[in-house]
Length: 347
Image (cartoon, helix red, strand yellow):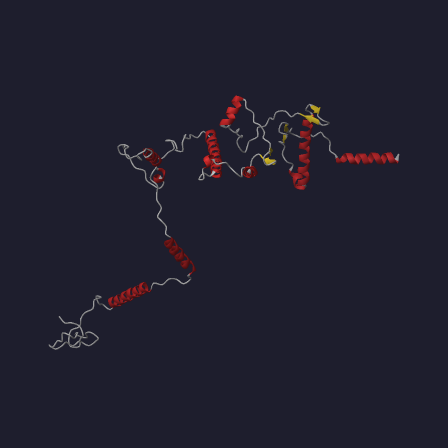
């Protein structure tokens, strides 16, 4: 009997660890099984929250999850591959979205045509066997290009024209095909976004500025055999200006200035000398002229402080000072025409 009593006590202690599946609350919680969402309208118990916050929140979460599990088990269930599955009903609560619903990607022109004609897309293999190279090569990508280059290492020149580069023509065709596909892709994007695009490279009159319209009219007039010489002008018609107009007009290309080897070498040497020369370049003549101007300004300022009008007055009398050097002597009436007179000539 002691053994049975110990087993029952041990079982009772283990059952006390687990709480019952029935949950009783003052206000019934709202359960939205479609979203697996439980909304609890009951207030918090402040005393239990202050006493042990972690235990109170854990018990509250456990009770709400138990209510959700009870509602799920009330749904009709079925067994699928040794698993019990319940089908959730449609959700009741309307949850807000952070962003708008994704718009389905618009179909391209080819996809619309394929859908209309019932053409299905075939999945291409990543690699195909090339009988010429006798190996597997990728269907697309740069490895495919390398394989084609290895296979077409020699090309036939029609009519034995020595000036014709068949490799260059093949490369130009490939570049043109890539550019054409890119233009088609951009047109599909513009058509999906309902942007009006022209059939040519010129923008439409709705989005074109007056300058673009004038440029387009000038280019159209110059697209004749006479380069627009004999085309009549409209009244008050303006001519297009700006860089790029002459380049677009046929027969009028902007010429670059010829570059000589000596001039380019001289400019490069000047740049190198300016970079490597650490000492600044001093203009002696300009420094002397600046110093003279400053000294003259100081003298005039000092004379104004003494009460003079800034003009030098010539002193009168015998003691008046003239030139600092001796007065030149004349020939005293006797002149030697062969000998040049010394001194300043008097008038």
